[in-house]
Length: 204
Image (cartoon, rainbow, N blue to C red; front, side, top):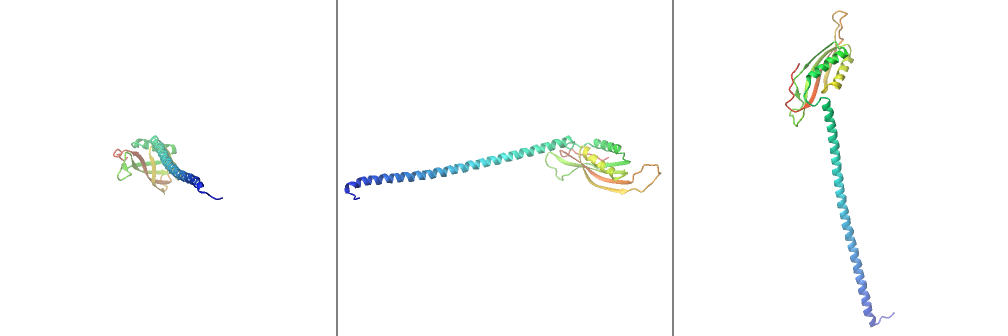
């Protein structure tokens, strides 16, 4: 096909139209890429915000769970009488009851003045301990085990046994006299939790 001079204006128009279409297409591609990039940036920002919110929500739930656990522990300790001033009279009555229930031959005790467990108490509540020296005569070792178990379960305090020394008692006295075969000496801490400078007890 041979082009004539009269065909050049038409060809120019077609070329111009093609260039316009190419320019429009290129603009559309660039616009589309920019839109995709902006959408990806917006999605990433939204995802980051969501992750941040999820993280904060998890921390709040974790803190709420921890607060509930601490509140439950506090209420349990308070119900047991661990939180508050020590109740020495109750401890003495408890020992008497255990002695009568298990028919212990002899039981003697001495309670030292109350001391803080922390050298420098801080906060509104502090742990205090009153150390008891406990001496008793036993028919057998199970008497001591039952006594310590009853103290831990029933005392209005946390009872921690530091040590117990058990020795055999030589036979003495008349045959019809009830005597123990073992002598036990224990050191026991009666632990309570309350405000500093309010736990000052004397020994018995």
